[in-house]
Amino acid sequence: MEIFDNFSLKKYNTFGIEAFAKQFVAIHNTDELKQILEQNTSKEKFILGGGSNMLLTQDIDALVIHIDIKGKKVIFENDDVVEVQCNAGENWHEFVLWTIDHGFGGLENMSLIPGNVGTTPVQNIGAYGTEIKDTFVSCEAMDIKTLEIRTFSNTECAFGYRESIFKNEAKGQYIITSVTFRLTKKDHKINTSYGDILAELAKKNIETPTLKDVSNAVISIRKSKLPDPAELGNSGSFFKNPIIPKVQFDAIKEKFPEIRFFPVSDTEVKVPAGWLIEQAGFKGKRFGDAGVHKNQALVLVNYGNATGAEILEVSRKVQQAVFDIYGINIEAEVNII
Picture 1 (cartoon, rainbow, N blue to C red):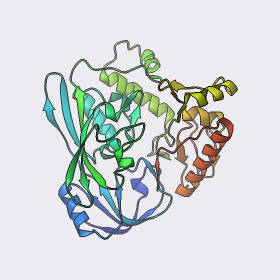
Picture 2: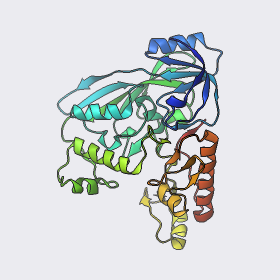
Picture 3: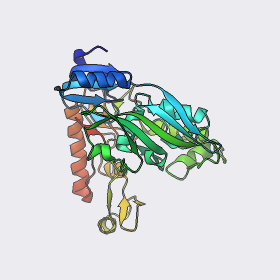
Picture 4: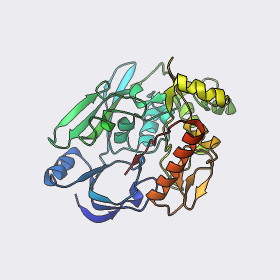
């Protein structure tokens, strides 16, 4: 392990923001993680995974610990299901493709989501009708103070919409080192009901889709709407889809009958943030090197040399405009650093 001073994080965040860490170290196993925490008890620490769900608005005056623990293994299986433990530093999309190649079902709708496996429970990531909580069994996490490994069950993670215990009461207390998923080996629950998946499958004349077919459909849809971070800096969906009381929604719908929505319960409604932003006139709008993507208004982008502060300012303009028109607050999904 080598600790680097004044280390550039440009290649370690998908927005491609130039920011510097006071110190930086990459760790490759839990022994190294324990050692680095033991040796640096008095230092401020910042835990970095795949860098896909954050916006750096300043340099990080701390020891940045990059979790680069690799490896995955089957820890239980029977004729119907399999449990796979995947270490935190594995790339999420590559892991999803690995499960599909092995005939394991449950993650295919979350293909091509950027980031690493270790951060997926933090946000309870999801796409096209599925979320991490649907297949999540448990995760192992190191307590930053005691250095002990604790196992968190699905229930203990207190998953919600882009929420978990790691964003709330346990924030900053643990470092996730591995995640275990329970996946199907047969009788897969193919979910094609959400978004454009059915239309994408119809284009290819696929009536009885396989896991791979669903994954390929999701990949095609995401590529058509979302820019590749390697080509255009971004963090995927920047905003959460707001969930509002039905009473509030009904009042808004009277004024804007064309508003799109998804019922959540008898008392709540989810409104697509991308639709709200597009209606507010921001889709494709550019402010210097920061802007809103031309194909998906949920995505803020760095056209080259935008600072994190400039992208944050665009996000605030968007939030204010949506609130002024619809009276709806849209929250950032990414972590603002």
